[in-house]
Amino acid sequence: MSKCSGELTPREKALLKIRRDSDTKAAELVKMEKMLQQTKNLLDKKTESSSDSMGYQENMVEDLEEKVRSSRRYRRNSLHHTQMLESQMKTVKGELVGTLDHLQELRNVLRRSQQKAEERKATMEKLAAELG
Image (cartoon, rainbow, N blue to C red):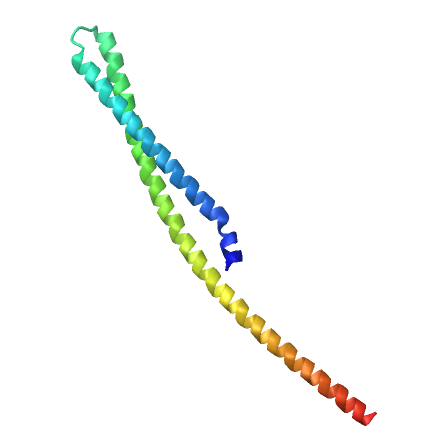
């Protein structure tokens, strides 16, 4: 079975990478939310500013909000993809176990056939010696 597990290593690596990416995006999301809150606090405190300056800050807040939404979507998609890969991996593991069991049965049948063939060969050689 260790050989079967070795065959799953690339899928498991891909799964781990997706999980790490998801965790990284979650950390980025937390940072962005903190930056967004800081920016909103600065906007609330600022009483004297020109309309151009205020427009720039509003755009920055909107950009940050969009980045947060985008990160959330990416995280949801990554989690969904991770769940799909985990499900596929379970299916493949089940198939591999079934294949391994079948191969072991075939190996046993082959051994029995070889043993019977050797016994028949020995019997034939014995008969040939008796006749010769």
